[in-house]
Length: 308
Image 1: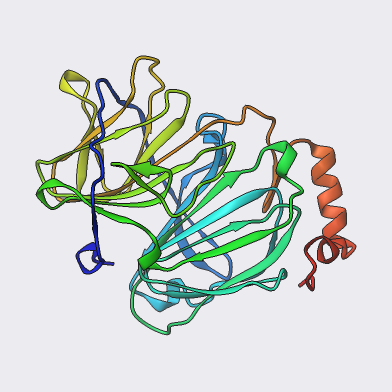
Image 2 (image 1 turned 45 degrees about the horizontal axis):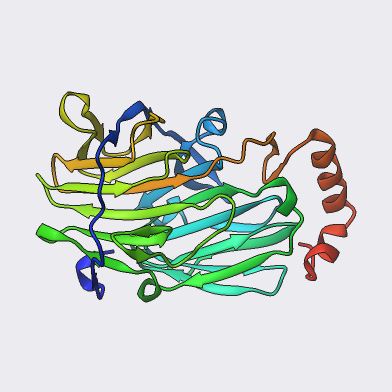
């Protein structure tokens, strides 16, 4: 996806950052596969769930070879969290047991709340060409884990693209940036999800709530994070976990080369996490109940659809 082809809106207000967060650690993702053999990089893994609460997982995928994605993600269940899939290039069809269907394609996203349980599939609608994007898992608070499933398609035109100085742009999937509200607002976790394109030598500033956990994932070029002697370099295909310094009011990112990166932040839930594959609850007993519900066909009743 070339952001230059998207209609942009001017920044409504500058972001003021007096003291920038810096990088606590740099993480290299793990090459793996999921679904029916789709090759991807798992960037945010289970061992970072506490540190980056409320986020549970980030997968990055990108390939020109159809053999790496053609199998797609056939029917599979989820319970207890939200998924956000953001597509830079390619076409993928979503269908689920709650009756939702949508086509995810260049520059678009889909936001799904699995809640009490949903069975869905994500299958490619292309036989060649590039497929590239990300899937983020966002935890639900204990009080909302058994909420009714919810789904929204976000075509590229519905995601605000803000034009900044010197050719920089920021796409605001969630939260707000430069006075522009994002496509989605979620209570409790208050996520910020930005896709930033930044020319070499330029700075990007973003205010962040002090209590939010945050990270940056660089998928093109190279950036440095912080200010002065505290700058830390994050290369392409690396995640920089941002520190939680109490005095910091945001983050400043400089492009060391033409760069594109995700900036993601959220308010931690500080609740127990019990995960078994595609199910994320708060206790092992709830996981056992979820497995029993799925095995015995009670999942379908909880979503009003047909269990796969």
